[in-house]
Image 1 (cartoon, rainbow, N blue to C red):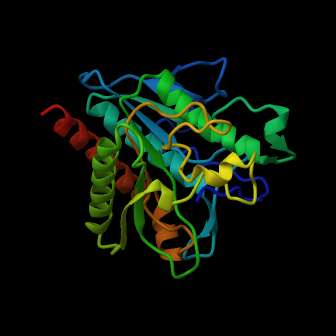
Image 2: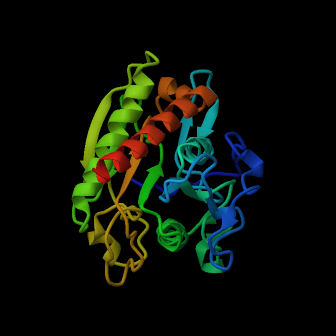
Image 3: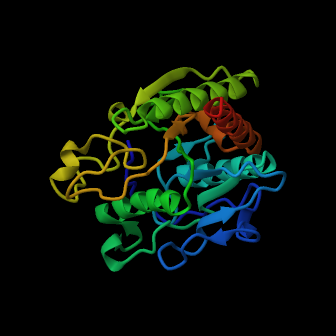
Length: 291
């Protein structure tokens, strides 16, 4: 479940291809709508498949996401970890001939925040909603052919493993499931080739993974019955009007509250391994689509 975490200032990682210079060869999709360093498009670096992939690095800016811990006891923040995975996957996909649009390239929100979106150093419930919804708008404005959300899971010390969600009620539900299955299988296989023994929680519909907001932080009563991940789900009158228009999946490859898995998520090698699985899954998805 997408949780608004109460946390103090944090420092986002500048690792991965592009890092703090991630804007260098990217183009703003719509600078009037999105925050600086957010919603940027990158051309292929080798060949051109004439296909665009949207990658979302979950959370960012005033929303650090879940808080975990490494085996050495260091605190880690979800948004710090999703960004380098996104940037690594972007670089790999560009080398495979894809255009790539990313939700963010730095420690920032995606949407241009208003006073209604912010309460001190935290996002309001409306701010969380608007920032996630902006990722769908970015993917739509960029005419992406596919969407992949990159997040990490959190829970009790007994929770561990990889899970990938998809929405089963969209007109392209079958494509959603096929993409989610490839993402789950390829990322999990890539991690376990390293001998990490990461358990699989499988591929699940997004109504099993929760909504974009918890019931304790509602914008209005429509949020109670929405029951989907906002990044993947359908429109809902009075609650959500800008759903994604392409097949999508959202992976949480590791529990960062498990110190072993958190240490992998916090390592450059672990981030590269996850990104490699994502890039392979996207390539396989389009290979099958064109048969």
